[in-house]
Image (cartoon, rainbow, N blue to C red; front, side, top):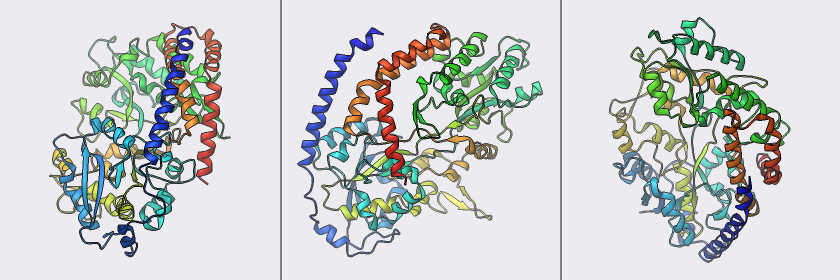
Length: 537
């Protein structure tokens, strides 16, 4: 415990340095902004063209915007040469001057560019979500909500996605960024059972913690794989990072997000809930003591679980839904693509009704730089590139080349498009534009049973703690205390589960968290959540 106190002075020094750097950045960026209210010649021209959300976005000959963004994750793919990327520009009537940087070093490359705050492109993909509003407070990006007359696609998107709108609303009430989003409720982490083992036992799929433990015991004590050795079965194979997803909700806890709000809007830290979290730890300690949670659970990897499936050694796992057919079921020689082996199932319930923790939809954000001489053109192009017409392009490509329309009106990818490397080079889901992941586009890549199971699990998915912008004071306090709090909570989590720390000392653990300024962090999270709720009205 003393190490946390001893590190306090060092952390205070780091916070001071951080604040000085932030102040310097603000000063540098303030000197690089274009004078407020002054329109460029380009803006005056673009005002004369009526943009409706459909292509083209301008009638200006040789119109050009510059964009800084990530290149493809595939090193052999250059997105500025990709067909889909070029098609967006062609339809929009805009030439793009691209600066594309590898995603592996994007943050390290772009962060200093933003800190310098000069000679920036018209549109920038930020290296992070600007959680502390560093760039917002520096005036580096324009307030997009003041340009909504030129952003009909984005306006519609925000109206249809109030949760995302709330997350993107800064403390000053303005919206500065356009998001690149993922699917928040589909293909999320879920429990998966070895269905042949369950069928062999002749039992129903468990839905409660008690039924689940009894099934694990049967897996452990019987020759489930039929190899003549009743001792080589491993009842449950789950990486430690997924244990909070798997069991936390049954105890009323979102241990994935850490923070959560109850029905009354009060914010809690799941790892500091004196009754429910203690019950959770006691449950996992019981599994550990019985050998139902393996001794080396903290070091278990997905590759090891995959190998166990290939040898039919395990009965339960927990992972992203995507893996049930593409990875785990595929390890079994009898799998023919039509009948699942490892299959996603409903969450477990205990004292509380179970659910699965989803993810925040916002992955990345684009902003229009306030120093741009082409703000209106950049705003319109950004709006068009995130509209439905372009989203369709990102997912499906071009009819006849990457997809065909079936007799029933559905779509199927062409054989050429099923070649992943070819389709990547073609520009599918380009990360240099604000693309939104598609459920339909994902479904067609998977076995029908898998897509059907995914839809059955969606009602069980619950939103995680939302992304909320922090004020500078909030950010300073959180950075000062939360890292140590999280580290201590993680260490004690493993200690309580494995029994190296007796649960009789749980009250001391809670007291220690309080002494590490947990109440102050909760106060900050409560204020943030209140702002989030206000923005959603």
